[in-house]
Amino acid sequence: MAQALLVLDSIAAKSGIHFEYNPQLVGGAAIDAAGKALPAETIAACEASDAILFGSVGGPKWEHLPPNEQPERGALLPLRKHFGLFANLRPGICYPALTASSPVRPDLVEGGFDVLCVRELTGGLYFGQPKSRDTLPDGDIQVIDTMVYKKSEIVRIAHVAFKAAQLRGKHVTSVDKANVLTNSVLWRETMIEVAKEYTDVTLAHLYVDNAAMQLIKAPRSFDVLVTENLFGDILSDEMAMIAGSLGMLASASLGQPKGDGLYFGLFEPSGGTAPDIAGKGIANPIAQILSAALLLRFSLGLENEALAIENAVKNVIGDGLRTGDIFTSAPGTRLVNTAEMGAAIVAAL
Ligand code: IPM
Ligand code: MG
Image (cartoon, rainbow, N blue to C red; front, side, top):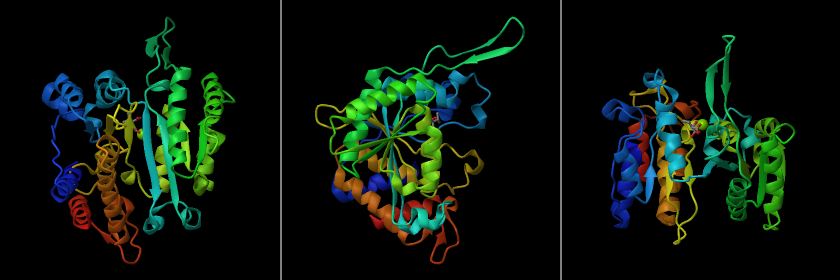
């Protein structure tokens, strides 16, 4: 987050635009300081803002707490729900210079792996009721998570995917499990129905197991991938890894556009807190920095400034700078830490 703020400061200095920050605690830090993962002041500050730039939350220190009080279920999911952020956009791009960092065979990603994952974010198993854990009379334990979608929730995410595809490769792959789940049958029917409004976009369907396989087998065959909450969580990690690292995957979580065409949104790296390397100063700041770029684009309408950040990242990667997660000792590359990567991106702006 520190590096992302330096990048925004640099954008501000260059453009003369003034950004007003209101830093607030959330997740583990808020539990430690205020006793709860999502303090009322934090929600109030978010409500008074144009957008949320969110760091990663969670970690072993808080895993002993009841699930609803932990950083993920006590802060991140309620924030997504509170602000109606149903559309999660995750752009997975393998820069040409990062081909060697992808675990997938170079010839499969060369020439551009560039997928936009459109993940439904406020429905499905994450939020469906009932959700419970009970000890049965015979002593056995029974747990329930419920997968719920309304047609209207599928319709609105379908529009997001088709509109995004119109601005890209004009191809949508909808991922479901329609051979098993009632949810997915409605999902597929609805995608087919909404697609009729987008005659310039082609629609394909994949079962989620096959989608996981096709992503590895033919990563370049995807343009926009749209799917429900849990499938999107899983497939976007796979997509990030194909592109080189989870540390590269930014995300925008958006609601409906406001009257001015901009969105209130939450912008966060797609990965977690990486407790194994916490405090060492070696994490890849790029997902957070690219999330700040998405914030400029979607919440503030600063397209040129967003592009400037994205180009700076591309150039720094092209120059061979690598944090540990994307380092391969390929010729012309250099291992750097978090601050060095951030400074290089600021310098490249
Ligand atoms: C993500 C994360 C979250 C999710 C966790 C932290 C709750 O994995 O944004 O992908 O599952 O949505
Ligand atoms: Mg995830």
